[in-house]
Length: 465
Ligand code: GLN
Image 1 (cartoon, rainbow, N blue to C red):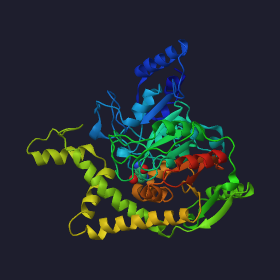
Image 2: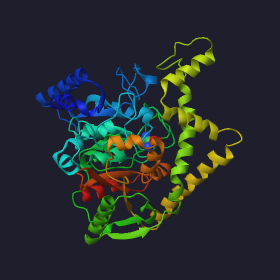
Image 3: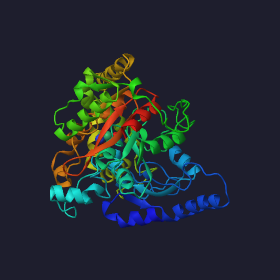
């Protein structure tokens, strides 16, 4: 009840698209009955959670913040949603996002932009002399609604999706813990695809400890997603006694990217020093192909988008145009009315890259570059590095009025410089809030781990916390 009240009290954040109050109360009642009858409770029994609106939810609207899927009600739950419900967690709502999860601001879904809860904190108002009613900080994206839900305390945990940073970016800008698990560790069944070879469900929580609890429940093979793998054995909780002196932390020199703010740089140095003072080995490393990752991601993303979005033809899902002069005209107008400019642009670019005459030059080249980016990480980890410490974003959250003035695609691409390489390599990464900027907005840092060593990654992240 408190969480539902909090959603209503903070409705101006625009974090939720759908509130599932009735279902939540029933599910909560069931957990309450178990408690009263003395049945043992699991770690998530009665815990309120929210889900990004690109995960299918049985009998609950699933819109992807797009006209294309307005009114679409799936007949099944995504595997990760079902697993949380099976554990007695209580779904309070579906959260806002960029249309089809394409973006880094949660600023251009059809339900309007999400506002960063920190815009309303006293320190932000005093430092920046901004009136949050007329101009506020963005949440980042595309899982901005989920990040705002956890940050504003209306959900204890939220699911996001992460294809190029969409869980970590808003997690960092909203001051919550955001985990992108190893590719294949969590099922994508029921997550409406953006880039199938990079998508993973992301976990947002108030603490690293909570993220570990949720990871343990969600991980593992799912026969409905052939890319999933068996989860490694994990103990019930993160170790309380852990010797940081056994850890070697890499600092990738290429991550001193243009546009990195001095506040983030200062935090990055501070935490690196903290590791060193505690006895960890801290070492500069090189990931030489980082500079190609933005372009490489862009080509691969558009190609997979062009293929994925072909299913939205007005016949089976969501929107269908009233134009019926011919089947082709119906397809064309349906897609024109259904998708925003960002989605349409990516479909067009993807089809261009995949033309027979362009395929080798763009798609194959990008695949080869992706392999080089992956190999960079492998080399570093083979040399004895346990985790990499990097920034998550270039700066703290931008003001909405600034964010929308810039070319969104360029902005998006720049913002993802620290997060995208990880998706291309399938590695686990987590962002942890480490400070507030002088403007009173959260700053997070990212730790990157080795494939399927998500638990070790969280153990180190827990140490920073
Ligand atoms: N900002 C990136 C994009 O627009 C990442 C999206 C994501 O991770 N869902 O593609």
